Length: 129
Image 1 (cartoon, rainbow, N blue to C red):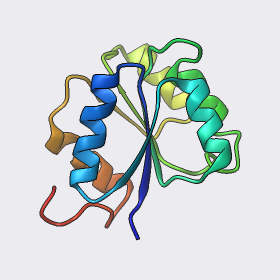
Image 2 (image 1 turned 90 degrees about the vertical axis):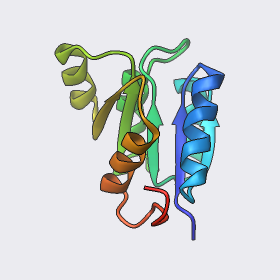
Image 3 (image 1 turned 135 degrees about the vertical axis):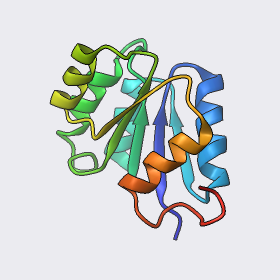
């Protein structure tokens, strides 16, 4: 059974790139344009991993992470923050909100798959990583 990843980013191009990379590795991907959409999706269905941007309209990724941790489907799921933000203070804020890991954009596809394979062991097809 494919593991399901929720990817959250207001930039359609970035969502598509992340989705393309993850689908190529054998994962199922659902997409949300911001934290509000993602929280609505998360309240309706369970996922195995969340990858979210920080800077988005309506609800930023750190607020989304904090709120996702308060839902049944988001309480224990790994949450990776994929963002252009690299300041230590921002990373600490993400960690305090409940983020599992932090990846700085731009990223290499192999880097993303490596991090995903660490937080979801066995989820990546052997020839994809």
